[in-house]
Length: 296
Length: 114
Image (cartoon, rainbow over all chains, first blue to last red):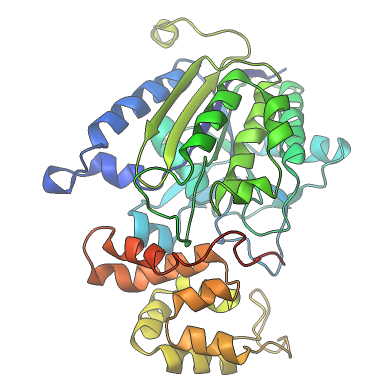
């Protein structure tokens, strides 16, 4: 069976690409520290030597629209073109093409349906920055096949937070039952507190630093029970009007498992929103230098 | 409103047209585009979509505060308005002013649920 070699949860900040590649006067003062943190985070994936990436994100009204809005959708295609005109325009993101791992997509779809998740699917999916940002930060070579999984955190009515956790647990079970010898990393991105298009946007910090502090604690400690006791669809309006993206972090807590402490925890307090990075190794942390050994 | 914001935001030519001629673009869009089902041929259109008067006026006057109050999806409005107006301002200046203009609003914000 396939092995889950890393579980990774991250924010997906669309400005990282531009900040990290800017030079001279265009380079923001926080860029160097941000790059250092991202490179350390990237190393946690590199060290796990994955063959396949399951990528959990959320379409930001790019391909999925109000005339036909799925709650959870799995991509199954040989390739995924990526990034959209308005992401190039606003964030300077490059166009990309990623290969798909269709066998695993099919396995997740069939198995997910049988576990009671009525998953939508797409055979022609252009993915957006919720998936390409972690490719840029964690695997900039963009050389591994992916299985994209989209969640609706954006167009209410949304699934309950507990449903995201349950889907995360199911994804883990499904990947672990995939008849393959491939090494799989499951990567998901969301938000901590975030306000978009409202009065609390673009502040000096995220709109609710106290929520962010507690969220990092829940995630780092795998405290699913504590998190689920406090987080509801209604409560997520309070930290910021786009904070429902936190439910993708809850999904990833479901993947990592109840009580699973993250091996790597980092954060960066930026204007507008806090960055946060987590890596779990379900089968123990790989040795530093394991990749070098494998290469030899 | 959301369909207008969505279809304009994804089309570079429409972004410029709406920036330069908001009322004319809104009128054209309501007459020609509002009823187009996005993945269907033109003959197979809806028959019933139209703006309310205050929605039409908010769009025709680039009034992002009123759009927020009317329940337009804040992400759609923000993204399109940044595309149209950030270029006229210094770094983050437009985004901060956009938020400042909404400061009188408190929770709960207008419902954006379907």
